[in-house]
Length: 215
Image (cartoon, rainbow, N blue to C red; front, side):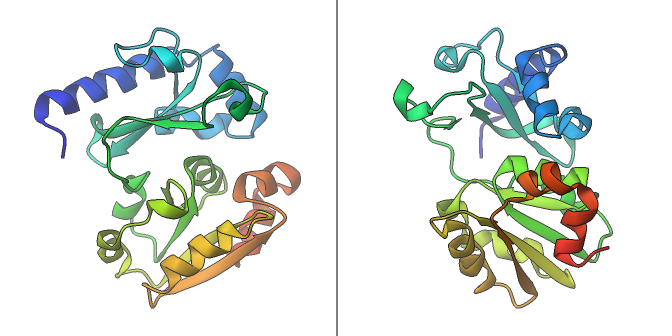
C-alpha cells in the first residue's frame, strides 16, 4: 500500500492529467473508441505536462485506478499509448505501469453498488465499454494480472460474468478460465472475434448486453 504522501502525489497527478483531457488527443481517441461519454467519469486524462518520472509517456492517455472514496484516493495510474503505430517499432509497449506497483483491480467502485451481478474484463478499456452499456465491471490488467486475494470481492454476487476477448491467440479464454476456476458463481462469455469495446463500436450497447444475456 502506498504511503500517505505517495497516495497524495498519485491523486494530484491523476487530477492534473484529467484536467488536460478536454480538447486533447486523448479525448479524440476516446470518442473514436465510443467511450467519450464515460471517460470523464473514470478520471481519464492526458499527459500533456508530465510529472517527474513520467517524461517518457508525454502524450499518452492516463488511466487512474480510483477507489470508491473518490479521486483523492488513487491506488495507481496506468498509461496507454494513443498513437496510430505499432508500439514495438518505437521501443515501447502499448501500456506503461508505474514501477514496483503490484496488480490491482480497476474500477473497484463497481463493487460497492447493489447489483446482483458484476463483470470482469481483461483490461481497462473494456471496463469503460461495459460501463457505456450500463454493465458494472472491474478490470484486470492482462492474463497475468489476476491475484488469488481478489476472489473474496466477488463471493456475494449471483453471477460474475467473465468477458473473454476473442483474440486469435486464445488468451482471452485463458484468462477467463483461470478466474472461473476460482469462482463458483462465474460464467464465461466468449466474445468471438471481438472484445467488449469492439462489439460496442460495431453493433452498439444492446448487442453487448444481449451477448451477456442482459437484454
